[in-house]
Length: 509
Image 1 (cartoon, helix red, strand yellow):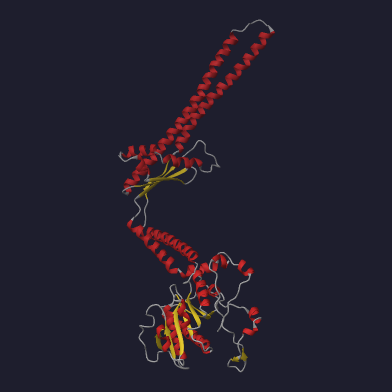
Image 2 (cartoon, one colour; image 1 turned 180 degrees about the vertical axis):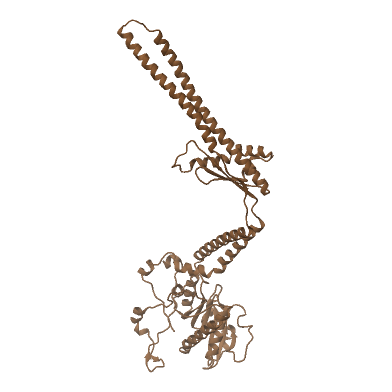
């Protein structure tokens, strides 16, 4: 099978998304070992924290707090003020005096918290070395808070009553002066004196009314204070909080699992975006400039999947053999990220082609992939790249090499002028795929197609590059027709060199 690269139109390149969500999801799913390991680590750490660092004994109590400024539409400002007052050294010091403890108020404040359940209900949580100590601390804190709240209510009531009584006394002095003026007035019936007396009597009546009003308000202020004092009380006696170790263990382990999973997914997503390694067959074919002609699932240790892998391997070998039989030029397999798979495919292909004649496998893989293997009867001959000159012209030559970083590009034509690229999905970056395409084009090595190793099972993208309209316009490039086995003749397209890929993401866009 011969493939050609497709030149993308400006419309297609402009429509390319900046971030392909499908590729991102596939790449993150392929890194399931990473985020799965982090999730498992979070689960273990959460369970370990629950066992190694158990929560200290805790006591809880609830206090009903009455406010003079209570309103039905209060947004909770008053209870938040009470919570803030609870976290003061004044309350902590009073509680420590009750407990007869020498602990510093600043340190004691770190061992209890307050929260508003409703606008008038305050909950106090206190920790201690034991349940009894925690209960005693909660009782002392509740008593200290109630006493402080009652003290403030009384102070406010006394201040209001005193201000009202002072105002009343000032008005009484003014009323006494008005009475003296009335008693010292002229008894004759002068019109001017009569008008003055009328104003004095009106002023006396007003002052008398205001004095009575201030006295009544002072009494109301004093009467309202006992109501607020009686409304502030402990409604839930301090009690120790019973904690279940299995429940705490499950809760902490679940929290650790969620946090580890979130961290793993975030790391996998960021790593995928930064690494920029194509996973979808559509992207790999586009960056290499050649269609995907075959796939081989990754190695699996599950028994029920081994048969499927062997069947896919057999189908791939037969497909490659049909393509190799149609050419007289030496063919090579160049790997990127999968030397073991490339060597296995080369041996299978050579074994299948051995029925047509002698076959020699030229090994140029990095490391002892094929050189140190234990040959079995019937296996093809394997020689090194240095012994290529000793291969007989009558023998079919199948080269196997590498295009990984550090590859000797000038040696690739000696392996074969036509090649299959055996690429592991998600191994090479976009920049390196472009480098491979450019180097093969410079070495005049025609890319027949791409064999994808370990593709994503849920990848439904098309890895075929189609250039039908352009191919129809290049009729003279087509080779002679040959029989296809059904009595009909078909055209054989000439191999095309791999296109030179762009050197940066900006050129891709």
